Each structure stands twice: as C-alpha cells, then as structure tokens.
Amino acid sequence: MPDARPARLRLTLDDATELVGGAAGAHLPVAGEVVFNTGMAGYPEALTDPSYAGQILVLTYPLIGNYGVPPEAHPTFQSGRVQVQGLVVQRLSSHYSHHLAERSLSDWLSASGVPILTGIDTRQLTIRLRERGTMQGWLYPDTMTLAEAQRASRQVEMHLEVFHRVAPTAVQRYDGGDLRVLLVDVGTKEGIVQCLRARGAQVTRAPWHADLKALSVEADGIMLANGPGDPSDLDALSDQVRGLFASFAGPIFGICMGHQIVGRAAGFGTYKLRYGHRGVNQPVREIGTGRCFVTSQNHGYAVDLSKNGGTEWEPWFENLNDGTNEGLRSRTRPIRTVQFHPEGRPGPLDTEFLFDDFLKLTGELRQRRGA
Image (tube, rainbow, N blue to C red):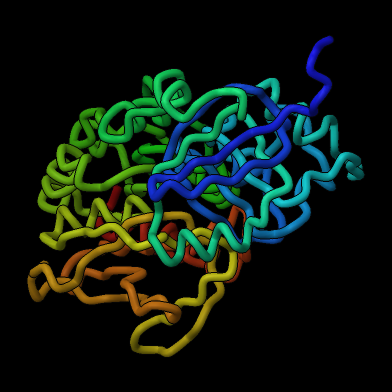
C-alpha cells in the first residue's frame, strides 16, 4: 500500500540542529543562510524583497498566511518574484480573508518553487539563531538524508551570482517631473522607486555594474538602494561611487546596502552582524537632535566606524538596540546615508520624509548650478 503519511520537511542547521514539521508550498530541497524577521505582518513584501535573495526566512509571528496574497504585479510586491529560498512558520493559515487576496500563501509559494516548513516553534528557533549567530541551513523532504539534500539542494552563490540575480540587466527609465534621479540597483525594493516617483522625480534605474559616471551626467541626484549579501563583494561598485564623490556635484543618498557601499567608498570598513536586523520595529536615534524613529530594516552587515573614514564624515543615526551605525553624513559634500528603509515596505513610515529632504536638496543644488 502507498505511504499515507502527510508530507514532512526537515530543517538542518550548520550546528546539527534538526527540526521536522509539516510541508507546504513546493516539496523540494533548498539551502541558504537561515535568518529571522520579527514583523507581525507584511509577508508578501518580505518574501519579494531582493535583500532576502538566497536565504531561508523564519517568521517569528505565530500565524502566517491569514490574509492571502494579492494579484501579480500589485504594488505590495517589492520585486517581480519571490526571492527567498524557503520559508519557516509556526502556523500556516489554511484559510485567508482579504479583499485583495487572490490566492493562498501556500499556492503562491508552490507556484514559485519555494518550500514552507510548518508547525515549528519559530521563536525557539530564533533564540537558537540569536545564541549561535546566523547559520547555513538545508530545508528538505524528510525522506532524504542530509547528504542527499546537500547534493540536490537549490541554492544561490552569494559572492557574485546573487548581485546579478537581483539587478536589472539594462537601464530602465521612468517618466516624471523635472528632477532626474539616478537609482543604482543592487536589488532595489519597488517601494523606493514608488517613493521617488510619487514625489515627481524622473528615475533612471541602472544595474550596479553599469557605467555610473556616464549616467550621472544626466542626473540631478543619485540614490544607492538596498540589496542582498556582503558589501565587501561589491568593491567594484564602491570604487565607482568613490569616483562619483569627485565628479558629481549633486546629492548622493544611500539606503541599506547603499549606506554600506558609500561607507566603504569613504574608507570605512563593514562587518557581519551576529544575526542581523530584520523587522519593522528597529529603533534609531538621530545624533545631534536626539529624535527617535521606529524603522523597517533588513540587513546582515554594518558599517564599522572604527575603520578610519577620515574627518570629513560623521555618524548620522545610531541603532538603539545595539549601538550600531545607522547613517553617515559628509561635512563638506551633499552625501548622506541611512541603514534603515525610509520607504517602509513593510513597516512604519516614520522616516519617509527623508525622500522629501533628498529631493528638496536635489532641486536647490540644481537651481544653484543653473541647470
């Protein structure tokens, strides 16, 4: 007789921790760095965030999937595809209810080839990741051995392939008003594009490996946005940005990975955080004013201020949980960065005013130049 047992999946971590639970989504083996997100909502945004490319995502909130998934190409999605390798949840809702919902989370991830491990104490798993640090993991059917899963698992090479995977293959242009923004794409969230266009900017969206100096000739401001992986693997981009410091007179603004790239271009180092900042409730404080904000974040690396970036640079924001740097400002040039996501997709919109400030400064400097 055929085996009538329900399908099961197993998650094995680098430290030999094994967790077995129910299976939903696609039923296939995958591998990737296992990370956690503490948000209570926003799973369509998180799962399509290019900063999660190549990773297995653990959601700490205990009930996931209860409001389904909106139609394809909905503004909720932060890219054109599901970016994660796999998903781990405590309870996957079998029913969903939302006026925009078109299908279930399980059906969506099944069509995207992404497995879901269910029935796991995700908070206990999160404690494990906090204690031991982020680890590599393998998510696979429990009918396979670990050795079989390691040979067969689908995974993303995280040193170079991942950056080409999430970036556009060619320059894309979006119509708008008079101000022209060059957006450097290392895995940009669509929310950033939406925030710029909502404020009337023309956007030229360029892959990170394009000739940025040539494209900057037609730009009034430059924005470097988020992306996955280790910023030290993108030193070719940092070199280009360092060149822009000298050749480009308009404002430069970095977000998340863009903050780290600007930091490395300025002479600072970067380092890997023990378990990263991934959630929608990260508190930051603006240095000098003391103003505090709740922010959305998704990153595993931070800028190292102990590495000498020179006296030109000053810290702008700091993380109130662990004191890590959350922003930089140049004292002599219109260059600023933030580690968090002011566009908040998902997350609070407390710092969306930074887009207004960036475009206001862009317009003022353009007017001074007589452009």
